[in-house]
Image (cartoon, rainbow, N blue to C red; front, top):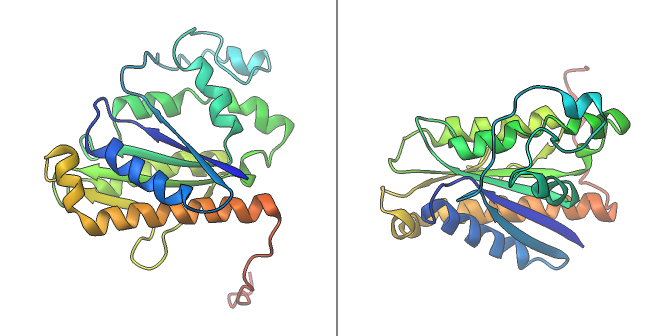
Length: 217
């Protein structure tokens, strides 16, 4: 059994939350997968001050702020897999999402004790833009950068869905996102791939046979 945690960085209940919900439903259809959705909407999450109190005191949470972020740390740590979803703001993630991600300085404590703590976890990303080429790809890079920084394995959607799902909402909220059938399918594919990879790690299944490294490195 694995738990897939979806995190919605939108400040409103609209296209991004709709797409993430549908993606999590697809993942939950796989035996052994449970899901949970957390929305950052209406949550009070303060900025990281880089005071390093978490690092100096060996804490896995931020002691500087007693805000809505504090209970989210353990929820995040307990999950086996993640789906980060954000609407596009100026070709990047929302302030809510970036602030949330920036507050994970305390993970240094976990990684110091176990450098491979996050390498057993899998992540995927979804972005929603109001225009067809409105920055979905660059926003995906922001979200995936968080995974790379922490050593979380990134799941590709495979052919045509190289590093995440990009949805075009036509600036019509959930109704517009519903009409992007390809984008929705890609989001569901990413969610399933993330869940399947996490299950393989959890169950210790053998991965497919890999081709030899032809570069010799």
